[in-house]
Image (cartoon, rainbow, N blue to C red; front, top):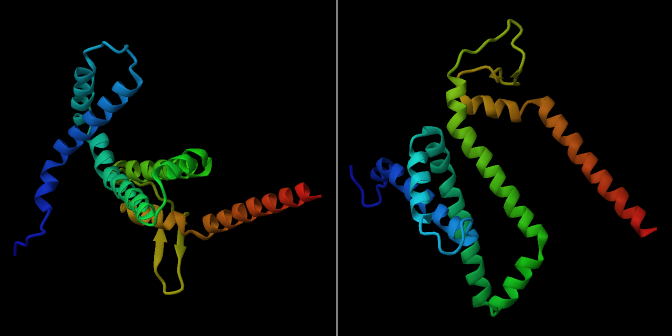
Length: 196
C-alpha cells in the first residue's frame, strides 16, 4: 500500500544527492581557501571533476550516503539549539563568542565527526569484508557463550553480529573498564596534586 510519507523512491537518487553534496562541499572549500588565487575561474570545474570521480567508487558513495543523514541531524540539532537560545533572549554575538572561545566544543564536534566517519566507512566496507573467506579454528576463539546458551562469535558472515560480539566481549569490556578507571585515576591524582 502506498502512503504519502513513503520515501523509498529517494533511494534510487542517492547518487545524484551524493554528487550534489560533493560538488557543493568542494565549491565551498575551494572558494573559501582559494588555493589558486582570487581570479582563478576553474573552481567549479575542479569541484565537478572531483564529484564525478567520487561516483566511480561505490565505497565512497556508500560512506557518504551513510554519513550525510547523521551530519544533517547534528546540524539541525545545533540550529534548533541556537534558535532556542535566541528565543530565550540570548544574543547571537554572545553565542558566537562563546562557541569560538570554547575549545572543548570544537574537540567534541571533531570527535563526533571522526566517530561518524568510522561508523560510516565500516558500514560500507565491513559487509564486503565479512563476505570473504572466514578462517575459523576448532576451539572457536573469539566467541562468547551466554547464560541462555546463545553463542556470539566474531567469525560469522554477518558484519553487524561481528561488531556487536567484539564490543560486548568480556575481554573488551574489561579493557574499556580498566582504561576508564585509569583515566579517572590520573585525572583525580593530577587535580589533587595541583591543589597542594
